[in-house]
Image 1 (tube, each protein chain N blue to C red):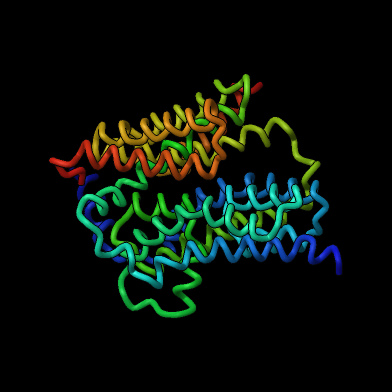
Image 2: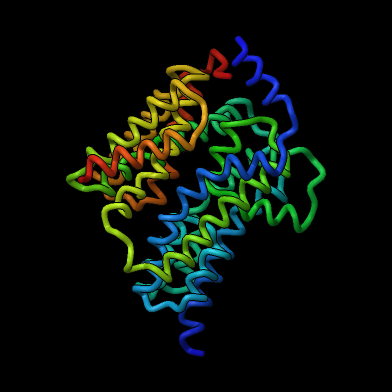
Length: 102
Length: 242
């Protein structure tokens, strides 16, 4: 019983916090009548999100062997620039990273 | 030319549940190893199998979960956990605003809550960047596929945790980054150099914040994403990006 509250209660508290920020825009349309500049910022968010989703994590995760993951994502980038689809560039990048780590 | 026409008709057709599942598959592949890593963290902390799975089922948030686990392990107060997780996941509000704005109207009550629960960075990027307009069937498929990767990865990871081949585990860690890199390349091809400028600025900001200024990962993500989209909007103030 003690062990349950030790983990289960904080897990549910964290879940509640996460759900609140997710549900807010679905129920309250506070983001719908924004000034033109702000809505432009909102439209650019997904592109702006890509940078920090890749860097510096891709380098830090691999420490001194960062060249392996960097090579992997560069291969994915180049492939995806020339051809549509996601699965092949991703598999390619795992392969390149694996080979560079050997 | 033929290629162009196929692309055109594909974007015009209504997006189905199956389309969502198909687009969600790379996310599933990407989430799986990360969720396995999370399960390993849970196991090290002394959690039971059902607790680790409950964590992923109810939270479904990469960095938010790692952060929460960290705080729980450090004996943080419930209010600290609540506020930190709220802040780290604040970006979901912006993403949800964009997603729900793109959705056809008429989604009510419980299904709306379920769709909201499925908002993640990756789901958002794929849904908003890849195809428009988004339908609720498409989003459900995308989210459910991603969700099963996250929850399945947690369960699987907890069971096998120590038995993985280290080299392959390490290489598979590149999956999520490769996915973002692929998305970036597709955006770059469609919208031009400004995409690389905006993503480059946010990547640089995030690196400076994390490496030099030692800002927490969740905060750093929010700051660099917001700043860079403002800069991008300033740059494109006179012209339209789309």
